[in-house]
Image 1 (cartoon, rainbow, N blue to C red):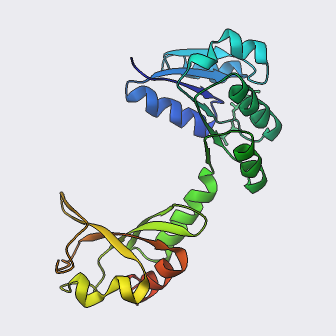
Image 2 (image 1 turned 120 degrees about the vertical axis):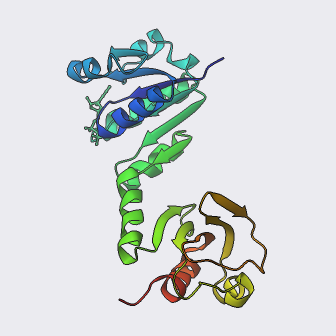
Length: 222
Ligand code: ADP
């Protein structure tokens, strides 16, 4: 059976999730309290309904408990976001992803049963900041409060050297988990692998170690 999704709140974030899931051929129920928003998604989502997600009766009538994954993308109204999440949890929705507005909101969401809390503005800010520090830092993904994965372009300091030469694990405490070379990807590369120009390294480690690795091997002087 095809998985079913519901997106509650069709602002920029929820709307974008709704469009993307729909374009991937997924069944999406789009919900918003605002009629204009709902009309905008009538042709995009499988179903689009005007509803207040803080009304438990409405959620029941929509059969929300049978939906596999519900995304709560209510923006500024933190109270409505929390109440909606709590009710979805009580109604037995299997998977709930919620957009948090700030750290306090995130903390409460995790406590009341959100399976996954996303903080798109903060996370995107961090990713862009790393890319601003160096064009060679292509992406930055936070794994936990103190561990991340970075995707970096092999700088001049790495070219034509092997992983043994660079001694990344011992020097910086980070691990190169994969090397992308054109269309190829080497997962768990051998220590003797020579790094080519334009290679992209995927590196995992503690933030403080990644930061040292970036400063010493990735960022290049202008
Ligand atoms: P973004 O920052 O992602 O653009 P917005 O705050 O603009 O977020 O959008 C949030 C959406 O959530 C709005 O379209 C708003 O109408 C909708 N919304 C707010 N409260 C409720 C609610 N109780 N039930 C359903 N939708 C809601």
